[in-house]
Length: 366
Ligand SMILES: [Zn+2]
Image: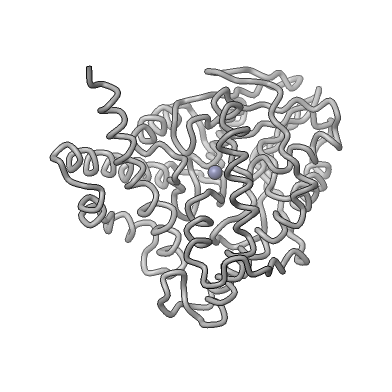
């Protein structure tokens, strides 16, 4: 869930840049396991939604081995998930799938490898290209910004105001404290989570035989990143989609592809499934939420493209395309959700859609 936009913007506007407060790493994250089908489980962090959080881990148990989808943001979180996995897995963990390169989904790769030295780690080809470049730069930037971001949030908590400087409620202030704990732990344990790249590359699709059941790794196109993998458990009707679908608000960040996202979502939702496991948030038994996302993504593309083609500047587009209808849908009158919607949709998706549209048009010019 954590990506550069929020952290960088928070760090830049921090009144105390460089102040060294990364407290909170003393709180230990806990997880709960939910059974989805025979031998299929999802492990979820026991944290209310906030500025960021550990991702869901899908666990698929076969006779020959167990497959896990996504590592966590810190070594502590990954180890806690590992304890949960061992409670339900009757076979050793042999396969780990990274849905995309964001640190909260890959930081724990090395912790898994240490526990299971022969584990195979899978990622999409684009993810393998991006993780050592954009991923490494993003990680370095995040680690550098943690003290400033923590100090900024701590100051907001003391003042009782939100990121926007306006008075806020206890729920949002608790989310700031939880986020400080999360990034504090990430920074404090960064030497235990030195990046480990996947060693198995996926292009369009790849089948893994778990012994008595098959899991499909599938690619549908650019969306949350340009290398998002989807994990299908056909015999259970389960699709784990990483942050392509994230709850309670979508995550269309500065490393997302808002113009292609909708079509990717269409292709993904066409795969038969009964349960959809988002990157963050509860398991979804209906497609209503991703279909709302789909409508919003279509609107963003149409509205931004038409203004850009008419010669409007990004500033004009940002003043006009406000997504108020979708803000009401996803964020209602909830203060925290409105902050998330501003940071993870409006402030990132619209400029990225504008820039991507401009570069696509430039590439087509003779
Ligand atoms: Zn992500």
